[in-house]
Image (cartoon, rainbow, N blue to C red):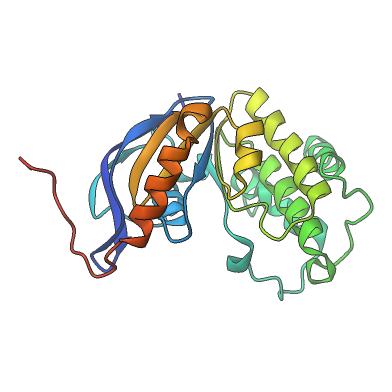
Amino acid sequence: MSSITLNNLTLGYERRPAVHHLSGVFSSGSMTAVIGPNGSGKSTLVKGITGFLRPLDGTIDRGGLKKQQIAYLPQRLEVDRSFPITVLDTVLLGLWPEIGIFSGMQPKHWRRVEQAMETVGLSGFESRSINELSGGQFQRVMFARMSLQDAPVLILDEPFSAVDQQTIADLMTVIQQWHGEGRTILVVVHDFNLVREAFPQSLLLAREPIAWGETANVLTEENLARSRAMAQAWDQEAEICRREGE
């Protein structure tokens, strides 16, 4: 199973909470948009789920999954594109957990690489340096690399930021293919129209959970207004609070 269960989860930095009192389940095979105002804790949440950030309180049950079984695409600003590496070599990094450093590439691996490059529309770009690519082309590279990880859980943090509409449409097709394969998918998204059109489930955050469930029930005017009000009223210096009776 690749479900992820959060139990009264609090995440933050230097004992300052950025997300707290979050409980719920990303069910196996679900496809969820993580949404909310700027600074609402979306990126903090996905870093906690991927294991890059330890909980300040509460728990994350990954259903027995190992860290390498969760594929994670960080925000583009967190990826160093100055390193002199080709598109092909970047995509090949997706096979690292499978073949390691000492095993050679086999024909089946090269077929998978070719298919991944073709799927994201980058056939013929193999020898290009990643620092020569546009933002949309670079995201296609990262999606190809992610495809090769063959992970049961895929988490993407703002993959469509500063990306053209055609690339968004093409990459959403890839995400929907992953979903069709039964993988569990979490995507941090800002475009509510895209969320309504493409994501069956949504989690609306404003440091605390506002709503979590079917997208139509989450993206209501009442919930969105509440999320904006809570984000604006947030005290950055607040200590971890606890529920009554804890």
